[in-house]
Length: 144
Image (tube, rainbow, N blue to C red):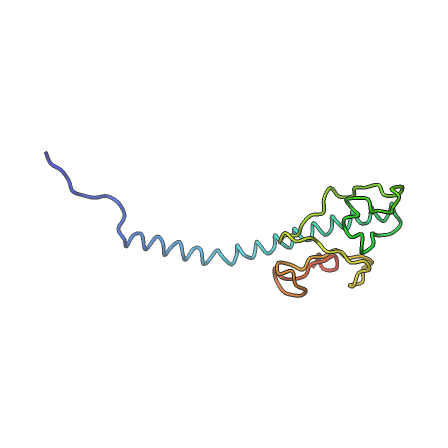
């Protein structure tokens, strides 16, 4: 009987080369991937804000005014107390969407950026100001 002691498999050098190639490819793709994530967050935020603005316009058509600051965006889903129910023809939205960072959208009536009302998010950090994912996005700048 002739038995061969030859082992098959990868050497340490071959494994190190494969890992190095994968690291180089990851380094090249990471900036592109993170840029795409940022674009997706911005696109989703813009879409949500436009949807909420449309619902606010329908609310205004029925009620001759926007929801008050105290009623907030919930007035688009549930009839505000004291409305009498006669002019509220909602729900105008099935549910108020969360922003890309799982935070509630904010509502300002009156608006502070030249619009009668504003819908906005404070971004990933949930603090006013910031850049990239931490930027504030609202009905005043979603088309930028």
